Length: 187
Image (cartoon, rainbow, N blue to C red; front, side):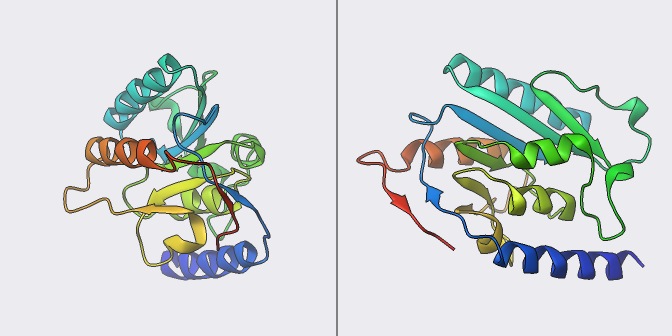
């Protein structure tokens, strides 16, 4: 059943993404004002890393919103929504694993300068968020369909930990378009 849900959900998402016409604005950390972060928040240790990253961006003067997916129907043992940190759970997914709750829908509609997918492992609910997001510039990990979801694709490498991936992401986003800020239609 889970494989069927995943296959149908992926097919529907890809069809929907192909129907979206968007203009990409390439941004780096110097020019971005509003950063969105989506990640798997099921592991509490990952949340601690994200708090540090959000604090780092805020120290740079950036506005930040993070949306974490908790792979649990009853997240009472997990985290509570705060101003910068929002969450959605398995309970808010429809049959094809598409997020359909208030937090997810609001996040998708935000016009981030940069959207960072910090999910190092494939997670369809997170891919829905990234694929449908109205962000100007989307950055995420390499997988077999990453060109549908992201404008900049990063290889999470052999050491697939969130800590390592955050370090690599920060380095590459700082290097983007240092000379100029072109606008490009990608995808």
